[in-house]
Length: 520
Image 1 (tube, rainbow, N blue to C red):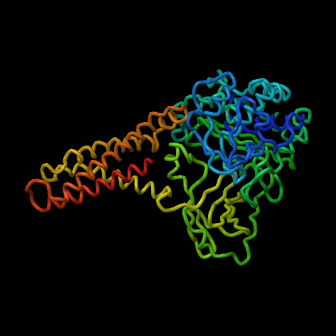
Image 2: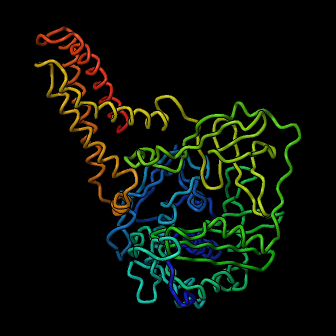
Image 3: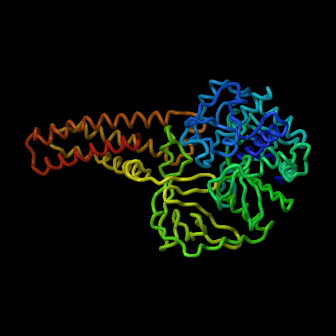
């Protein structure tokens, strides 16, 4: 019986952090969501972005402009607030100007948490207990800094078919990142929080506080979900609901509030593999609450789609760090289904519903995905992608990397070169190609890499950097070999071996340069 178990609710934690911000605004401790964060954050000052101060609104709605960062979010558990210098060191780089678009960023709630801590003189764990958990009677809920979770913590498994397989280790975010995803709770306690979000605990979350949380503060455009105070705001047949989903360390959670129906839904589960998808579960719950979803009407006389066709690189990624290499498959491919309809990442067809909104028809009363396209970007509820191509595009980097590795592996053919024609560079290229293949294999899908990334272990990135610079140096050595070969300065040999060496040496130089570009 899981009803008495504790679950990690992951990113649903964000709405708890936002609720504390809403309470502070109602009390008058914060004047407005449009106040600069630096007005209340005293341990350090956030740098301006594009000459603008980052505001509370920006952090509540994922519009501050930070790149996404996974490196170091999980690790040793600090039990005191981070000093200012350490906090600034944790910050990802800015990737876009503030307010430019909604791009989900896990750094935003920790900065709100640091601000609240500085205002209250308490760490966020104590502050959340004082202002939310204790008043709501959520005695089985805490913002945790200890990943063990106690004896009542649910065990999560990697599912093998319908049976649990390998048990997953318990993990949470570092204490600095706790405001983004580290609450442990029970179903009974979450029912109390749902009730408060429905307006039934006005002494804890007043109508004014709920208005801050549930009213639109930002969006990626009409027809898409809007952002309130960390809550996503959706429309189901003209009726409003708010929600947030969470997933981390093998745990998943869905939190949905339907104010007009005075109904809330909380679903949580632990396990990876044979579990239902969160969006599917949520859609089925909303269908139960509101009835089958009704699609928007197709646009009369839809425009041709030829200007929308292309490849778009998703913004929620590393932009100025080594994590960028993990996003080379993070692109959206837009193709034409016919003159007026689209296929997006192979899915479709998507029809025009007006104003750049493209919608896939609902199935069994559950809405299909939707996007906004303008020829330069593809916008989703919590992210967007920008048109890309040429040498700077992710597909080009992928192809160059694969070509380079393939070319470098052929270094073994250097054994067939004429004697004294540069076997050492050829064999050296083979060795480094195999090393590169091992590094890229580790980055490509081994769970150990993901764990190392989240724990802040940099050795894999260091290896990648070493190999990239080594391949660049090797390209220079081979370039000398190319010059030597093409001048004919090698021993007597059949002509075909000479031409093989010449052609192959050029291929190896190109391969080394391609791998260096890919790694760069």
